[in-house]
Length: 321
Image 1 (cartoon, helix red, strand yellow):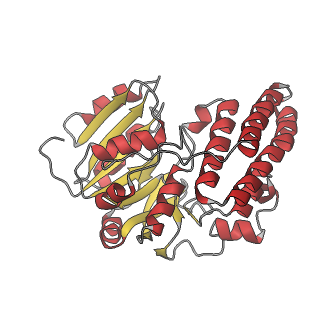
Image 2 (cartoon, rainbow, N blue to C red):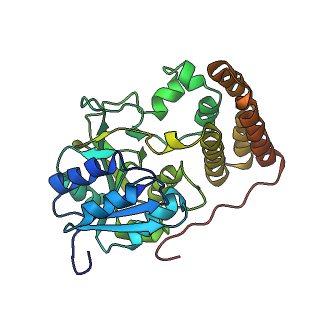
């Protein structure tokens, strides 16, 4: 992409994404032909890099290969640093643009950040995922303890997941999914990029959006710009133990960073208690004792966070840090 000056670029972080990356890049080329693409691969072991190299030939596509998994935040920052575009669209490899993105660019230029509507394969909005409000300590406790799964209509969950809003109505929102989020370069630079303390995945986009709004920016939801989202293609390839460790760890990192000491410890306690029913349910579902090992690791993790001193805020990493 050297010598190509484009106003917008897409940053796509991959990890064993060979089954979805081709459709993602083809959709970018079709719906946003003037948009560059930066593919940052986090040490995939499948054909992701080979496929990306084949698709990069002759197009505005740059491929960056990491020898080790830098995590989503680290790879996203790496991709942002690799382009001089004024606006950058953070795009998951399992997302396929279904409309042009000019509406996103206009809103992003005006407000600082913007996001479109994520849909399933039939075109229905992904309610509860495409946009959310920022989680409160009570919401995270309900998430951890499974209340929101067992009773999705409770008032906390309805508010958290914007189930009280028409998803075809545009306007300001708290937290769009990082799978389809556009930000101006100056916003990313001012915030110091995505916080790489959320490693390897989860809650880094929530933290970024929260810091952006605290800094006075607005995140505009533009439902006319749509993209189809497969969902979870990378994290489902992790072992159940790794998935739980990463999710619990990042959730508690977010709580430590944005909540007060008592609220933070309350979330830690809910996390510890939640491991018990999760372990029992896992044993029944898998018909094995492997979930006991996972549950023990989560109890150790949450117990350390609960009993030890409040952890220091994770480090940020960006162009100006």
